[in-house]
Amino acid sequence: MRDRALAEHVGGGYALTLMRANGQRLRMQRYRLGLTQAEVARKISVMPSTISRMERGDSAGSLRTLKKLADLFNVSVDSLIIFEIDNQSNVG
Image 1 (cartoon, rainbow, N blue to C red):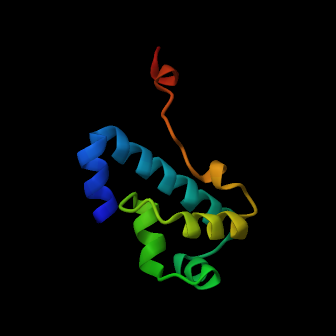
Image 2 (cartoon, rainbow, N blue to C red; image 1 turned 90 degrees about the vertical axis):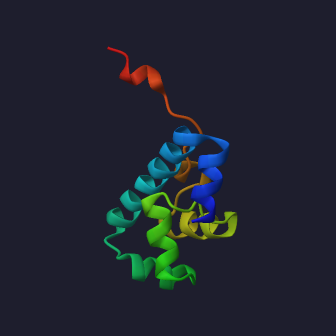
């Protein structure tokens, strides 16, 4: 919850939107491998609640955790993180 409070303080809704989008990316990678949150947590040696909070966008996760997830999913850390949202895709 500390990450969420910081995001609200620093970036408001935009930062929270980024955290949620990053959580969706993590969830998609987990689904791609057919793993549960508990299985992912066990494989990277974290608590299942860590994975749950990250997928919900309540926590950004530590760099160490992101690196372990990227290794597990066989992707780069960059591919798990969205740094900005392209608002032009919503222009119609």
